[in-house]
Each structure stands twice: as structure tokens, then as C-alpha cells.
Length: 91
Image 1: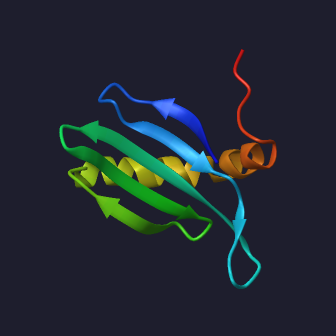
Image 2: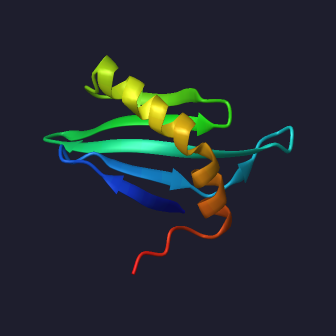
């Protein structure tokens, strides 16, 4: 399951995943930025807490990718907290 946390003016949607466990039994989650395009999506996926880019496709600029990484780093505790709570409750 994924949880939306932002929608940007260019149509990019920011979401984070449920918490998973890797083969070493360590927790991780994924923060995904995705923008619809004429024939598909621009996609950028960062895994936390390693901050590794695990998937990238499309036409995001280096500036946009750097901004996404900054968002992932600054929001890591937020993403883990709300993944544990089952998402963000917005009135």
C-alpha cells in the first residue's frame, strides 16, 4: 500500500510505502515521485533508510532528482512514523 503526501504543480505525485523488511530483517520503505506523461510516467524511487535510488525512468532533471532526495532525507522520520500509523489522516 502507498500513502500520498504531496501533489506538485507539475503533476508529480509523492507517495511512501508501507514498511517492509529486507533479507537482513531490517526495515525499509520506499518514497516514490511520479509524474504522468503522454506515454507513461516519469518515475523516481528512493529506498529509506539507505537513500538508494532503486528505480528511475523518464525525464526528471538533475535539479528535480536532487530536490526529491532532499525531501526523502528531511522527511524520513515522518515517512516511517506515518507508515507505522497506516498513513496520514487528513480531515
